[in-house]
Amino acid sequence: MKKYIDELKYYKKLATSPMNPTYDEILKANSLRGNEIKKTPLIYSSTFSNLTNSEIYLKAEFRQKTGSFKIRGAYYKIKLLSEEEKKYGVVAASAGNHAQGVALASSLENISCTIVMPKNASPAKVAATRGYGANVILEGINYDESYSKAKEIAKETGATIIQAFDDPQIIAAQGVIGLEILEDLPDVDEIYLPIGGGGLAAGTVIAIKEKNPNIKVIGVQSKSFPSMYESVKQNVRTLTGGDRTIADGISVKMPGEITFEIIKNLIDEIVLVDDEEITKAMFLLMERMKFVVEPAGAVGLAYLISKKPSPGKKVVVVLAGGNVDMYLLGQIVDKGLVAMSRLLKLSVLLPDRPGAFKEIVDIITLANANIVEVVHDRLSSDVNAGSASVTMNLETQGKEQAESLIKSLETKNVQFKLLT
Image (tube, rainbow, N blue to C red; front, top):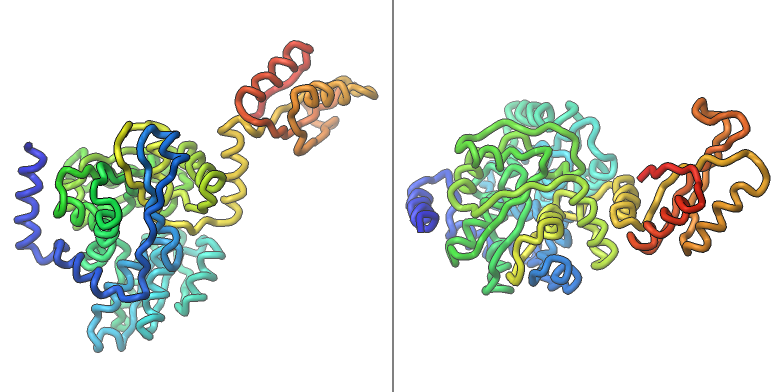
């Protein structure tokens, strides 16, 4: 009851504060998107429903133009600029999805666009941003340094800065996702979505709670960057995070001012996931659904798979983006196979004599495992003279077969060490 009263108080505040996006603004953003912004599909998944004991629907924002939801906010914000503002163009700082969204939105409105990206940004993302027509400047080694340069450019040229998340119009346009979910699945029980700076979550939670306050909205963050989680917990914006994570799209150390106020009042819960859980979710999306989803976009599903928090509920998971670096994608496949015990890496110490390795191969063959890669080593300092170390990657059918192979090696008194 208290939660409901707090929400009513907050909606009164929304109506009087020009800084906060309203439900009416979300409706306006929806009406102005035209044919440029897709209504992304809501896809039922029997695979993930069985894995989580819930009824799982996937909101495929990774199929949006530019590969993420970010184009929604960028397009609406730029479309609303005055003719005078459009003459001077726009500028933004981003290392990825926001950059591509702003670049495409600018090209659709035929205005000049400058994107400042960190010097260590993915070459593929830099190329994609340029491909949408933006002038890309590489400056700084992180977002803060790139943003400082963007502010300098705005001051010198008069260009409008397009914020990544902390802007009422950006938030409102992201909230259209909530309208689409309710249109396709009005009896949804829970919605899981990623939180970085909070634009997606803030907009969506306004749209959802306006229509049905009983629908739970749960935000998901990386354990390495729990800035909104800690801020809501402390009831004040909190600087936190900084550890390495594959979910770079939500690696935000400080949430936005506007997004924080909205989320702390309306969100039902914020939860955390680690990189291992994200990797497993990405792998399963690729293998079972043929969906390529980036780490930040998969965090909601990662939490559902690992914790199974909503048995029997109708659950929507927002898959927020699909822009994955190809080198990372290869690692995800390997690590996903390892996590599911379908890829074993082990080191075997053998006497350096003819036939010794064949004995190991025979054990592996009897276990019906497949040798993917073999590396022999006779020269390392920890390998005694007269011995050889053999490192192998083995493909198995799952945990049961992997355990059976390990037991066979132990029974034969093979000296080995598991490396995964």
